[in-house]
Length: 572
Image (cartoon, rainbow, N blue to C red; front, side, top):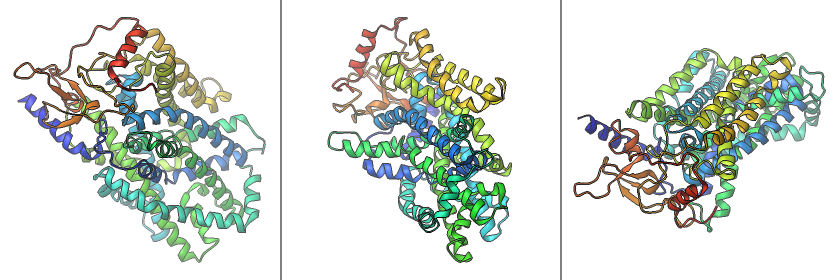
């Protein structure tokens, strides 16, 4: 009875995940969009207004020069960290949790990273929801607590329908958002040159000098946005196969919508500095800290150009459109993350809608606790753990996979192929987080406090390959063969589209999502089992036994595994 129930759960999960592939490889049969369409949809999710608040907060404290340099430093590092991770997601059609499993964390170890990301979606949903509530309060006098509830409920009908609904929403609302946000700003810049002069000369609470500590402190706040990369990956994992015929469009869409999201994010942060300075110097010198609120920023901008009633209406439309665009993504990505964690731990799948509600409940609680008022502190604190996590994955891909060749080149994610825990990622994240948080708390002196995130980055870059070398790569793969005789990748290096039947669920899945089953057929024939069925199985009856892997894992064995796994694949 128990195994029958598990099989039923697996079938239900398969049917539900046909829309969002919460804990699965995304098959090419689902990836019908063009690269340009996927890229445009992914970029629609970066309409969040927290960028403006972050830029304003660091600009008011450290001045324009230090803030802009901090934004630039953070943006360059985030791009470099995100490039290899996003490339694996787009090329192999996996979300960040699946990539983390085979990039130093193990099958269950990646749960830690997924919880970190799920926390990010809750925090940023709360920040964006608070901004929408502020807009509703200014426009129609709606009390903030009620506004928090409204901003939470409004996204539910869209999120429960998954990727297709999100694609339509982002496509149709992006032009409106861009027009409302940029046209008045461009008009002010060209008609009020004194505003640009004030912006360039603004010193904030600093003495006006360029200060490395101030730059590092500014960058530290910006680093907390890095998990936005994981939300971008939830879109670009549905990129079509890369072939010679679409290579240029594929790379362009990938670069701008994957790691390139930070270009747009950094630009918005600089605009946030400008809007705060414009408010303080040109509109209302007594506004103080409220200049960090996007509602105040855009309302002041519109009021300087239009009648008050029109300014209020346009500001409200901008705030609502932006909040819905990003918070459907926060709720969607958060629900995928929580469902991924719960399903692996409990071996049950209650449906993704349950986790949409769970994610939103946490976000609403944070709003009611007024997390927005602590935006700089919360983001600076969170950035330490965030960078430890993402730099570890990125370092494993670049150094351990590509340079040292200790980590397997293909990002393995299937249960039975991986060890449950891998010390490479766990030690790196743990040590980098611990040291950076100690630095943030001032245990290494006040001079080192602004450098805490840089400490997290440096420790992760060093410890990740060091741990892999010490452990000799023994904890990456439990098996080097999945037991299926056909190649995993096609002649262009893309995941194979061959379909195989899972004998547990009765459904067909594509080759990268399948393994040979340890349970033979009635006549002793080879049977296949999906990674989804293995995720929900407690008995291990379908899991192939571990292979004996040499302690040192010689390079010739690794190459043999690569040849078997990527037969017909050209070198990449």
